[in-house]
Length: 252
Image (cartoon, rainbow, N blue to C red):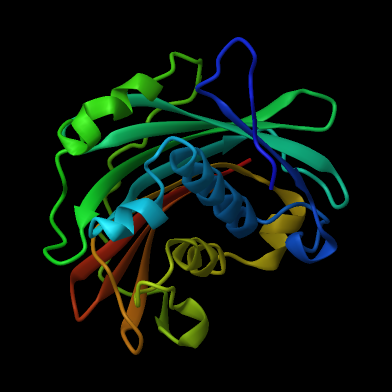
């Protein structure tokens, strides 16, 4: 994957993509899971180009973890369409950093944005690192004041106590860190809704907040509150009431 930067804003990474036939759903649109993977890959490449990639961090016994992700879309790229993802760091705090994305179609039109929150953790203690102390705090040099006109991730609350579905974490769920891949939660959550909805509606906004990790063999239970016909809040739990993640899905 080749990366370029906007000539006027060199702290924005620009990454081209192509919607492969096996990356689209029954409507011929890119799936949310694939888009999520692309966003995370762009974040990784952008960080690596600036000395904060996972490869370099692992040598220091640190890694990045995704805490929150909110995606808002006018439309998805279609099969065989080329498109571009732009990413930049909006803010850096002591324990978290805000990273934003823009999704650009092949005509150059912005068709979506995303906001994400990340922490850097110690691989042994699983505790957050002080970002302002890492590498003499030079991560702040990459902050970029580019527009991202969507709401920040919201607080999601789910009250229902009756699970809608359950899934036992298996081989295809597990990533190189030994726990369930963050994008697999997105796919499992979207599987809760009937195919017909995806044929007649599109996902306007998707949010996910990660609370704890789950592992091979864990039984994940999915709880869903319907706020209105087009807005649904989902909570994934394991071992009874231990929350793994929460999600909000808005259709239109």
